[in-house]
Image (cartoon, rainbow, N blue to C red; front, top):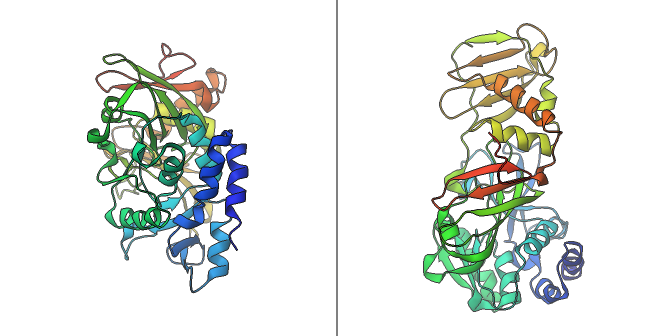
Length: 376
């Protein structure tokens, strides 16, 4: 019933991985690491998902697991009464293959896997490098326990740590490679310090506005800066300690109303525009809302930061006098408009033209084309 090993072998090739990875993908199919309970998107369900159990509905379970899509394995950090936010998953196979290609491991390397999740990536690394070369960290004890059972069932024994992945695991370092399956807004200095000079860190990286970039960072010599480029567009769940704030709709009246100088659709025109805008509007998160009772303003683009500033832009008739509402110390929509204008002036650069520098003391800044060309 499970034809996934063959599919994964093909994905490994598609992702640019060498022949040395074929056995790892064949011996560690994703299906061996997906728990019996998964959640499938369902617009009719109160939380937006419905539960699928492997024993109760094997056909739907296998269809999802063998689909090549992300498989949601936990909602709301495991709480039963949450709003229905996906907080753990089995990643898309092609993305796993792509991230491992950028990790560029070699025989004899040691690896720190941040965010054990289902345990699948840990298993692939174990098959490629050996159990003793792999350390994996998971913040959620229940998720870690399930992954541990699945790893043990295949005879795999990486060093497993339950703890905050942002802290790494210094006792097992220094590592040649660090691989994270959770997105960060800031690369932890601990990861830099626990990686050998010349080593590679691969992690999803983003802003509250756009969780969009896959960063490949090469660690510098001790006391020197580390530089890397964004090598693709991805969207992963956030590290729990770096999750952005929730977008709220404040009860306060707007301090400013007016027309919009820009169609709000252009604020997220594509992944490249959204990434570039997010760099220039720090701390700003967005949300689309619909108001069925208000036909003139059914669809709105909302923004807020974590210090009380907010904005709301109507998609229909956005040029009208009351289309934009803004409040708080910042004018968030004005900032977004200016940020997109800057992206246009830069020539609409794609995400892969951007890079990141982490200084020896942990400061970080994004640049365009060259580390000396900082995005302000």
